[in-house]
Image (cartoon, rainbow, N blue to C red; front, side, top):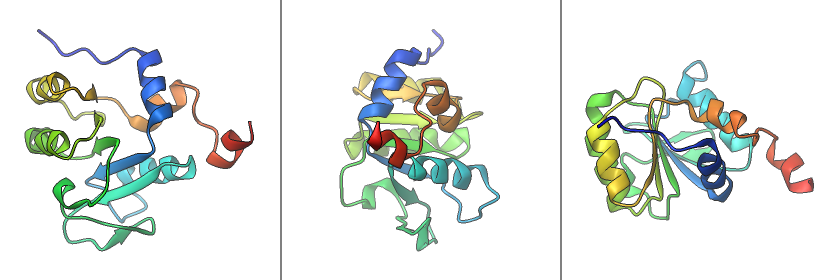
Length: 148
């Protein structure tokens, strides 16, 4: 059975409740998609947690070598890595008690996605978080959203 992504209403609800997003594979290079998506999310008020070995910080935030090293709660894990790594990251997302797992465009692992969903996580795969955030109508910068 193929994995089905959640409906837009459910995605909107989860993204509205989300505060802390760990970005696995977040590059310090501003030309990389992971950097642009994380910057967009940060500008909309989310706390971004870079997860990338060998990097001290990205976007002014301390970076961690793995999800298991993050010393505080994570709401959503957004993964910018090849599909072959998803089993590991999905397992770590479950272990750290994340509420959701988001696999970016081109990142697909039906088995790991279903395992994470069976463990109670909200799971999306093969979709860009930035694009879906906009599609859900949540694209206002944090300062403007807070005034509304």
